[in-house]
Length: 229
Image 1 (tube, rainbow, N blue to C red):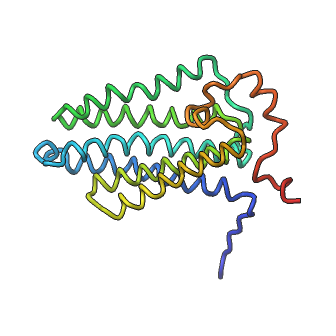
Image 2: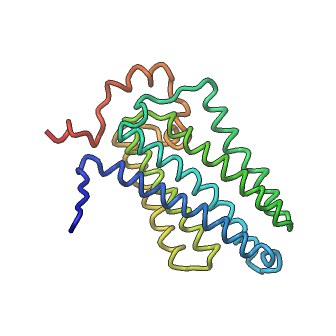
Image 3: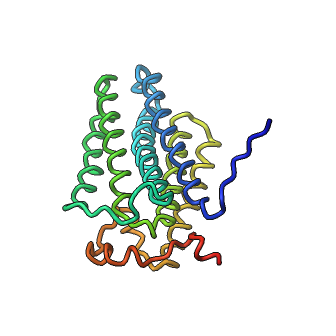
């Protein structure tokens, strides 16, 4: 007995977002597992600094990719509200969630205590999960295709970080290709849709909240079935 799962062509963007969420979650898991397995020898390793940097960045980027992709999937699938989430001080919230990783990374890089290192990774995981979800929710559903290309780039850089931490040249090269091509595609799509790239990356930064709320419902989704009539 065969079971066929069919996905309409207009639903491909949210399918891609769902796949990206798995890449992000995998990056977080591999980063934490690599640190647990290699913590006793990292400080004595000549490439210990490179590996620790890759572990932390893999955790942060993977966390942002995971929840950001799930939020993009929810908006495109109609599970979440299409309108941007305009919380008071949303730019400050995004800045705080991203900025807390700077002291956490410094502590992670300078400590030789595995317990402290795991605590720093825990802070990075929690903050990146919150940052990815909130930053993506702050962007309107009509801009989700651009967000997905940005998240595609993030997944590539997370994969690249995994390549460094695992000393796997193939992962490094493939991750760099995916990250770079995703960044270029994001720029092209932002130019085509007349969207500022930085506002997409930083969760709607610089966008007038009243204007975003009033025009969101009037926009057509670039991949909407209405555009294929």
